[in-house]
Picture 1 (cartoon, one colour):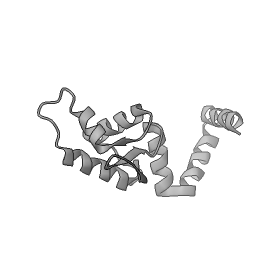
Picture 2 (picture 1 turned 90 degrees about the horizontal axis):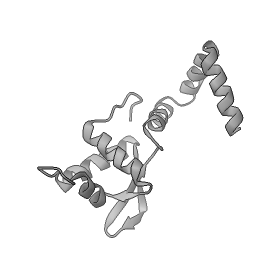
Picture 3 (picture 1 turned 90 degrees about the vertical axis):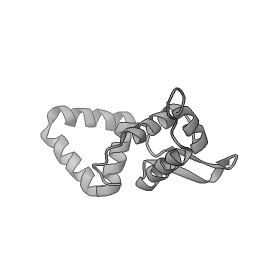
Picture 4 (picture 1 turned 180 degrees about the horizontal axis):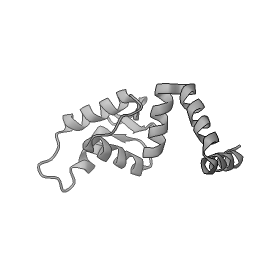
Length: 123
């Protein structure tokens, strides 16, 4: 996944459903929810392909050992869209991204104070 990845409309819808689900879901469960009030319905294979690609990009995690029925379970790799963006940047750029963020925080007093407060809260 590149750091600038933006989600397509179906990818965003799938991620939204999985973020709201509160736990892992199968392709079949996601497919059924996507097709509520949808005409024409999406093909199961379309949802399977999109979820597989989201897993390849690092946006979803597929639990290799966990299955519900015959389907693999998928869950978001990050808690929400902002966390996914951070996940993508860190995955693509690692320590360099953190260094740039710190440099940016040093030059922006409001961001510096917010970062300090967050570190104190979570430290």
